[in-house]
Image 1 (tube, rainbow over the protein chains, first blue to last red):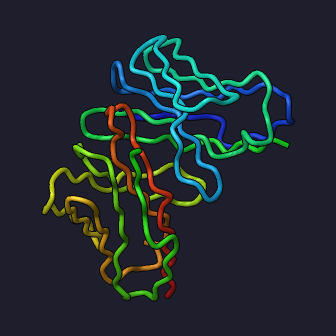
Image 2 (cartoon, each protein chain N blue to C red):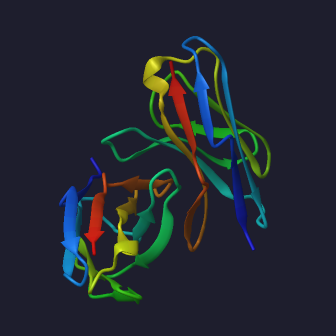
Length: 110
Length: 110
């Protein structure tokens, strides 16, 4: 069966520090992968999606970047965090049946 | 612009008090409408996918229905464990990702 792993679960980082969130998927090949952010009082906002290794599409201009170095690995990064980067970050993968989400990372930038 | 609107934002019910949640969408050429349940601090959990007007799906106390412009999630005789945020989503016009509503937060008290 397919599983999705996302870590860390919580993270507190100072403003200006770098960020790296990792997501891995098991039990499927060449999945479409996604990074969403959920801020307080807002719905899930799509940040990036990827249809294959090295193929990244950005949905909104921001302080973040994404990379897909391996088929089932998706990384969200930032060189310098801003206060506005705080939120709940979710990784997801999709197939013909729908979208499956990871457990999320709560990022607090202080 | 593709949009998904959910109402009400919050709903408080007594145990056993049935009600409905609404999701309206503006995307044309619907390729599925998704319902998810999200518990605090966790990723969304898939509930249903509906593809055509008139379609209905059920799971325990939940029933989802779909018309040409909206979907309803009916909750029959809810229990406290049904308390969660319920999210509705549709694929964007390009079919590259899901667009989410802001969700309805349901609280069921005993």
